[in-house]
Length: 473
Ligand SMILES: [Zn+2]
Image (cartoon, rainbow, N blue to C red; front, side, top):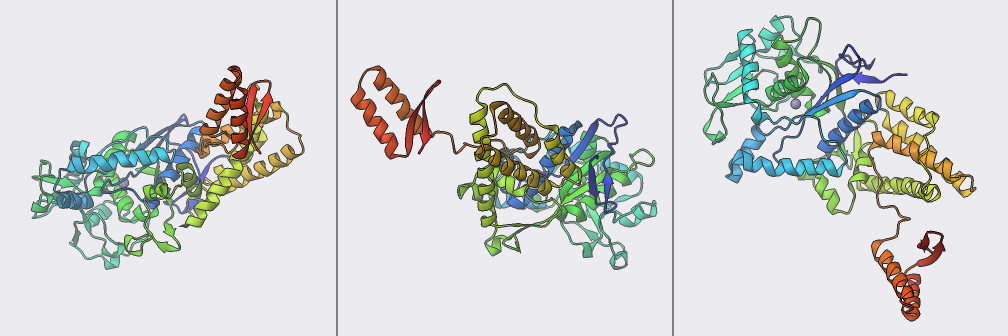
């Protein structure tokens, strides 16, 4: 079986065949954050989904170029910069750094390329110029440049590839200048926004006068620069499907830069919404969480990551704190099982993983990244291993092979290993070392004292060929 993905363009499951004639290289773009604030867990669910896809493609042998842009200029950011009375760079630098730190906490691999919009103004201008040359974009009286949906459709192009649109409601000549708008207000959208007093010092020179780019054109310019005019995969949250992604297609295909018969993007994949306690997350509802809010509650990055990838990306996800508690318990079960295997394996040389076990995981993930099915297989593995452990049926060679299975599977899951419950906390290990020192110095009184202290705290000393070890009572 090979990888098949649900393509929003066709609303169907399609076999994944990369554009690369050698079938090796894969280009993947996922819209990055708008760095106007700390990113919330809804944003992170999308980034973890993109990371899972990227890891699985790499695991499947593809050479993945993963591009994630940083939107460091758009409406919301400009508003915040104005309110904060600071410069664009000073304002966004803080949130960009926080975002990258958060990605690391969630064990998301760094993107191959992370272009910033403000560093691609020439490419953006060039793309707008191309659209003007082709008669698809026009300069309005205020000096802004708009994309003409009518002219685009007149060229035989389709506006509304990802979503169904009702053009009856569209009023000719109507324009929308804000970066975000509803389907009901489809209209010519801004590619370049002429400078207004509220923009403060945020502006660049252009052939149409001073101004700044619209949000949508930023992604078209940066994705095509990094991945070429046609690339394999574009991922994002379903909230970006309209207008952002639809406009990305219109701008990129409207520029007519693709080879005949090729689209801007071959496969579009969209992650479903995240709800909190069954409701849309909103600051006004008090159910709004940034990643940092959850870390402050004592949850670890890997617990949050596990929760995000415990469900299929196209399933609407209902986030609850109870769900996070269950994630913690599931990971503990896995960690405990692996910890026991590690104890048995000791320093046995690494053994190859059982291909049949890995095949089960692959079969699930090949089916549109069915991660919940893959976890099902992992937890069957945990139960069976626990049974065999209890029956004393696992020797060091078998233990090492089972650990190799997890090491392989975890290349995709990216959960890593946390502090294992069977590991000795540092303070007790210190006491054990002190006891050894006391014994060496023949201070048996002190040595017995430490032994009793450890026992009172639930640890006994066991003599092993490798020296004394602590064991939980
Ligand atoms: Zn984008």
